[in-house]
Every structure is written in structure tokens, then in C-alpha cells.
Image (cartoon, rainbow, N blue to C red; front, side, top):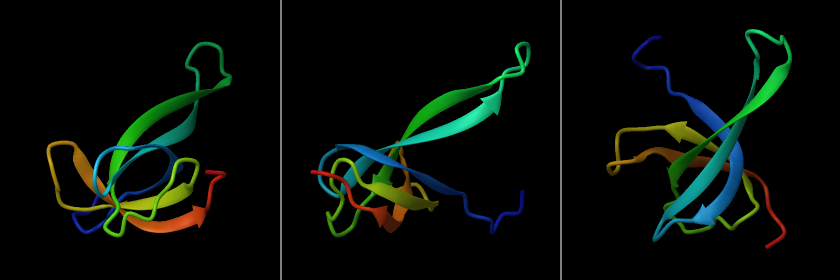
Length: 85
């Protein structure tokens, strides 16, 4: 992986985690090694939201950046779809 390539994740906002931070749930589908079925794997990332514009239920895209805190390493790229709330 090249040093200048930034990871882009896409997921659902599941919580507002303090000021300018949102928790985003990312789902990926992987092939099970034994059963050869696709299974879902989930991981939560903390995303920096500079303008505090995210709400629970939004679908967002986030891009990797320098570490902003101990666990926050992504910043908001775009809001793809607004949620219900």
C-alpha cells in the first residue's frame, strides 16, 4: 500500500460521541473459510465532524487522516444520505 493512499470508509452513524465526533458502523461482507457463505463483519470507527452536522441514521463517507486523538483517525468526507432523526 502506498503511503499517499488514504482509506475511505462508508457506514451508518450510530452515535454522537461528544463534541465534533460521531461513531460510524461499517459493514463488510467476507467469505467464510469453511462454509463458503458470505457473512457480515462490523466495525465502529470514530469520525471527526468539524461542523457538527451529523445525526444518528445518516449514511456517511469518511477518509483517513492523521491521528486526531487516541482513537479518532478519520474525518468526514461527505454525507451520502440523511437519516430519519
